[in-house]
Image 1: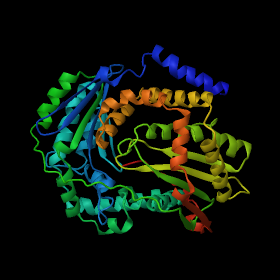
Image 2: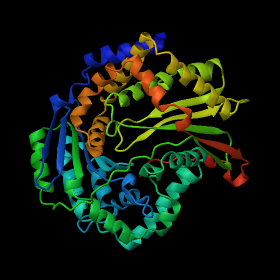
Image 3: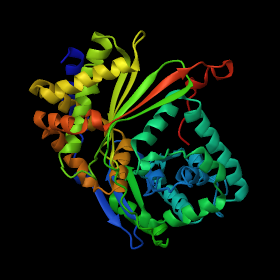
Image 4: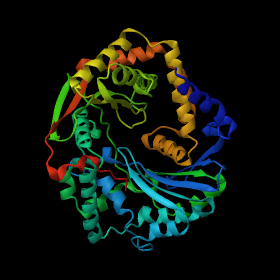
Length: 461
C-alpha cells in the first residue's frame, strides 16, 4: 500500500466519524410505511442541513420494454415535464426553481426516477406536484412530436456520434441474447422513429401507479410528518393492475463471442465481458460480493493490478477499467474496458489481461492485498453516504430491484466476509475463454465533418 492510499483509508475510517458522519446504520434513522393504495414510503432522517431530497421511483425501465417499444421509458421521462391540467407545461420546473429548489429525472434498465432537492420546509410542494403528475399527465400530441425529436437528438449526441458509446452499445447487445439488457436505454433508432403518443399513453397508464412506485425522502425531516403528508397527497390515487413480469434469464454461454465495430474514430479500444449473476439472481449468496472484491483487486484504483502492471509497468495500455454492478434486477456483466498504448493493439492488452486473470486463478490474492481492497470498498461505501442524494439513490435502487433497503446495513459485513479463496473461485468459474464476449472498435478514417464528434457530451434529461 502506498502512503497516499494509506492516508486516504485512515481518513475515511477514522476522521469521517469524528466530523459527524459515520455511515450510521440505516435501520437507526430509517422508517417505512405503505399506503392502502400500495405506495411505499421510505424516510431516512438526516438533520445535518435544512434540506431534503424527495424522489419517486417507478419500477419500470428499459428492461421492461418489448422489441418495438425500446426507449419508451426514457421518452416518457421527458414527457413527464410537459404538464397536467392543473400545472401546464413548464410550470413544474418553474415552481420548484421559484422555491429555491432543483429537480431532475433519470431512466435506467430497471427503474425510472424523478427527484427534487428543496428546503425541508418545502416538502409538501414536491408531494403536491408529483402526486398530480402520477395520474394526470396530459401527453399532448404536439408536445410529443417535438420531444421525440429531442430524444432522437440525444441518442445521436450520446451514442451515434460517440465511437466508444457506439461500440459499447454493440458490446451490450452481443453480451445479452435473451436478457432485455440487450436493448439500449435510449432505445433503438427504428423504435424511436415509429413511436407514437398513444404508445406512450398506454405505457404511462400501465406502469405509473402508486402500487408500482416508491417514495424516498432523505433529509432534515421527521418520519411521522412525512407519512402524514404522503397520506394527504398520495392516498387518494387509485392503484392499477400491473402486468406479470416473467423471468428473463440469460441463455447459457456456448463459446466466445467476438464482434468488430468499424466506424470513424481516432483510437482503437475494446470491451471484454463475462455474464455473471447479481445479488438478486445468484444461487450462491457470497458470489456477487466476491466478484465486487475481484473487480477492485483488478482495477479498484491506481495501485490495483491492471493499472499498475499494464499501464505503468508494461506500458501496454494507456487506460484500463473494470466494472461490475451487483445491484441489478437481472444477470449482469463483469467488464473490462481497454485502450492500448501507442504501438500496441487491443489484442496485446487482451493477452495481458488474460495473464493477470490466470495469476488470480492460480494464486489466491495475499491477505494484505485482500484487506486493503476490502477496506477501500467499505470506506468508499461509508463516504458515499455522506451525500443525501446518494443515500436516496441507494434506498431507491434496492427497493426497485426487489431487495429490502435493510440490506444496505449488511453490505460492509458481506464484503468483510469475502475470502481470498472465494475471489479465486469466482475468477475460475466466470472469467474463462469459453464465456468471453469481446467487442473491438476498429477506427476508420474520420471525415472533416465528423472530426469532433467523439468529444461531444451531454447531461441526463
